[in-house]
Image 1 (tube, rainbow, N blue to C red):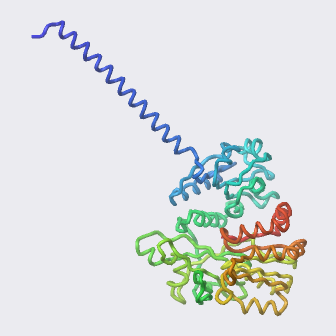
Image 2 (image 1 turned 45 degrees about the vertical axis):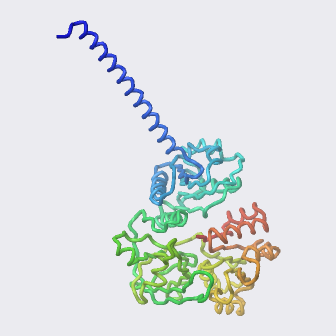
Image 3 (image 1 turned 180 degrees about the vertical axis):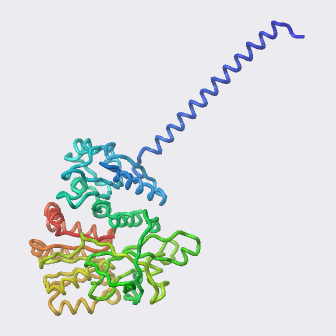
Length: 459
């Protein structure tokens, strides 16, 4: 039987061992806790490769929309961070490569209260933001004189610092669902994921696909189709510049048990007097070479005379001028669709001061609606006509090159006129904007936009 002395010694050894084990466990927990905190901090800390969603909210609605935007980006697999504008300073803007702002306007054109510090310490200062690309969802109420004023003030300041807009400011009048759908559409374009789900259940009307005609057989570009649709239930009305939102109802997609596809947006190329919504649709290709789920369904798979779910979205920012001012219309590719509707409205109103500047690849294949355009020109409804085909000569030529060549006439027309641009957001629109700035000067172009005389429908 062991002695009491040995038992006491064993107890001391056991106690020391317990203390040592407890200490090691404490160290391990401390290290683990520090590692987890570091990991979470790193995840929360925006990096230059992260798309940041920044909100300034007075009542909470802007924050809600920012959270939905954040969730959409995450579902598309994009690294993203969500933060309040109150946490954004000049250093954040300089480090960032892409920011989506969701901001409201309060009172008589003021920033929301949480953005007061940003207004005081950032706006009004000069900083180089040439590496920043941004977009703005501006919330407001048209019953107030300074509609979406803070969103536009932010946009103007960012442009002056050299930042580049991803697309034009999306204005939301009192929670307008159509404007929010357009923002969602732009998120799909931005992420390269057009199949992002709608934020709310869409409500469509019944239309019939009555015509589908290939317009550019043999083209070096994707096939483009003239599409016509007629309402099944009752006559519908719209204004030149408005948008057709179509539910693709792609059978291949649905056969695999997927939820309904989100809508696709197309500029309307006709007027109600034509008796149908007419579209100019290019068949897009997915990364695997297959036809796009939306455009492929509309240009190939949907049977003629079949029912199509469609809704019209008013696009007041691209409605034609109400008076007979000189109007310069610039577009490329399927951007001709929106310009065609505006020209139709101007012809119907007897307004002749129209200048069309259109670009595509080859004249033999890609001169969409040529007979109609030249007929308007002969009748005196197109005073100036410039067509530019990029591949009809050894060097590439685009609409912005022709614009610069006609700089003197551009200045003359825009002295009292307006310019509308429709087409590619990534290709044509930035080149045209740069050319107009070179011709008119940045301040003059900004004044033109503020007066509603420089308008764009780009995608």
